[in-house]
Length: 250
Figure (cartoon, rainbow, N blue to C red):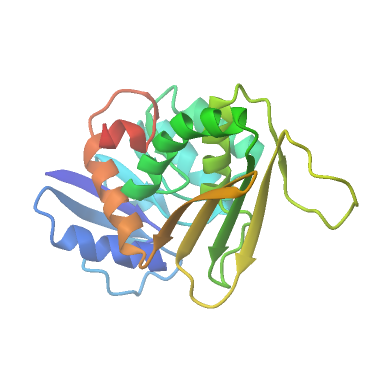
């Protein structure tokens, strides 16, 4: 059985993953990490990873400011890491890559199977539509408590498209600062924050007299939790290196 540490166990996703693993005979949480060690999680909860017993994998669903400590722990202990936290800086992303030289790291901006399948599909679709003159826009919507914008998933979708187009496009996040025609080589990325929206992403290909839209809607956080658990079971025992959900879903 895979033994996991749940970093950020007191958060919304930490609680979701705890419930999922409680019903999975192939994996168990041996310890959690949260500032509030009094929470009732069904396993011991500590304030730091260093206090936790050794495990096969760490699942991190916390906040960006905690990521450096998580990476340092996993590098020092050679513990595989499923890194689900978004909003990382360029310096932190470089640190993720460095850590993967010592231990296995699976990082994904979105853990859902649907989004990761969509990432694959877009790589086939985008070159055809771009050659036909279609403009590309991404609209993402999330709840009013989400701190980072645009979402990590929106950036991942844009990156997937751009990679299939030889990285010839640039990203446009704001159209209010200048009055100019739309550049044909841009991917527009816009964010909406409100209410309790779990997550919605529209990838819009707008051409002459026709529009093609790919939509993914998350109705609960469970889809991200299921993906994270699937990733943790996959990553346990793997050698050092960078992995993503495409490795998990095959």
